[in-house]
Image (cartoon, rainbow, N blue to C red; front, side, top):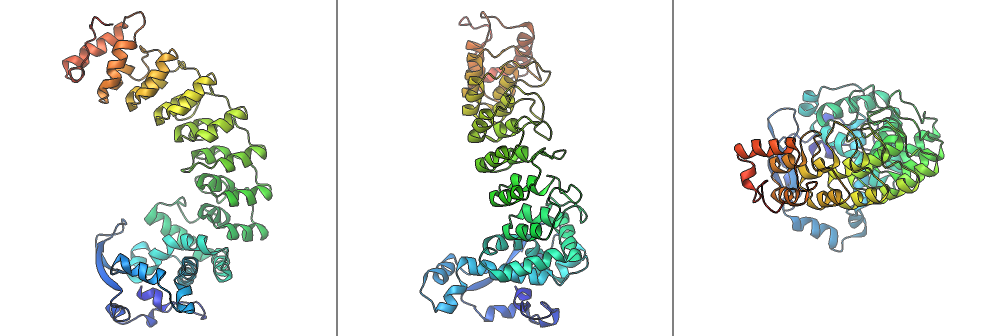
Length: 426
């Protein structure tokens, strides 16, 4: 906070340490009834020392400042978008003073506000760049200062494990696309940035791929308008379509745009193998329906979970499992890995277990442990009960499953259930 007050966004030198308050605690004198100083342990893995943080004295202070009628000039400064714009500008002005790399430990000790700026300026800028030309100007200046930009990436990746794993990895276009800075992306595209480069890409790949992964639809739209290649793969998530399906938010609109621009719904590669498998794992039902509508193969083999059905069972998404089965998904896929039924039994998804068995799932499969053994070991007695009463063929268990039950009984797992494998009901 002391450094923040010393930033001058209008001057030639944005920040000079000599303008810091000599005694940081004096900041309380300016608004003593509104703020307090508290100690917090560092939550980042730099060192173990404690530092002072300034915070509002009570939650009612924020309510007082943001809801009471204030003077027009003062009140405007408490509007969310204006405040975010001011913070973005101050953070960028502060960062622009660092045109050379500063060690993490030295940075925290000598310039404590820098850590905050590195982590939060993009959040502030994302909210304000569309309405604040001053913010846009500072963003453009920052992206054009290569040494400052690279220094930020090096610091950010070491302390906060961002997608940039070293200063030579991420290009400005990739960074802006990842951060969701729409106007910054437009500026870089208009300036001739290489839209499809993999040199200077992050772990997700190109600018289009990371925008898809992060769910920034407006940026995806701009990149496609500038002819970004939807078929480039060979990275962690595969193609842009696979990245969109692997993201943390369901973005049906992005998937539809990519398909309309020629994305191959059956392209193979990346961690999940196929876009459909990623969508099934994440439980994105609308995307699953759209992919199938456009010809996605429900029985395609490959990727972390081997198939879409197994991915859906692993994630516990019963509605998607039902959809896949209705579209012809193979319930007994030949493989040495864990079967769909085994995933459901291990996860405790009783509804899925019943659904799979009703569609002919092999209860005696021996992928990476029988369904019965996995249900017992993972503590799902209701599934064990269902398997024991409804999961046999002609009322008989195969020798391997009988042996599993015998072993588990002796070590105490089976005694937790109310079922005997020799029950007369079988």
